[in-house]
Every structure is written in structure tokens, then in C-alpha cells.
Image 1: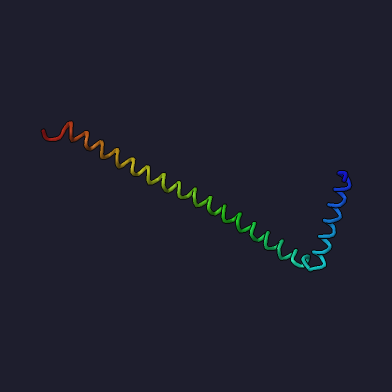
Image 2: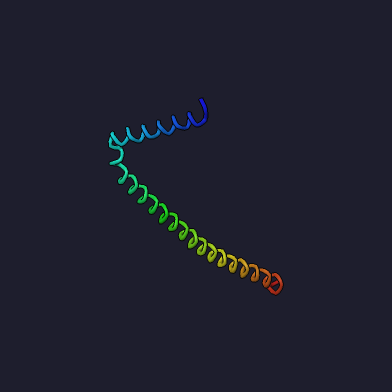
Length: 89
């Protein structure tokens, strides 16, 4: 069978399958499925945006905590150095 003959059979079979599905009422599901897909796409997008914002805010909070810990450790080191140099011998 030549390539064009095979392609025409595939096209004919595809059209037949589509017409059979139409007869079974699959087209009635088209709008609800599209609506469901659009709803899911919008919700997933907003979920990822909220997750991204949450990650940004949590990283800002963690960097603030890290800065506070760094200041405390520097102050502690400063105190130890002062006492070791000028404290009671």
C-alpha cells in the first residue's frame, strides 16, 4: 500500500471515529470539560503564585533572623575578646 493510500485510510478512520463519538453524545461533554480545564488552569496558576510569594516572604524572614543571629554572635565574640584582654587576671 502506498503512503497516500495509507494516509487516506487514516483520515477516513479518524473521521469515522469522530462521527461515531458525536453520535454517542460526547460533544455534550465538550463545554463542561473545557470549563473544568479552564477552572483548573486558573486555580493552579494562582496556587503557584501564592506559593512563590510565600517562599519570597519566608526567605525575607529567614534572612532577618540570620542577621539577628549574626549580630548576637559578633557581640558575644566581642565580649569574650574584651574579657580575655581586659578582664581579671
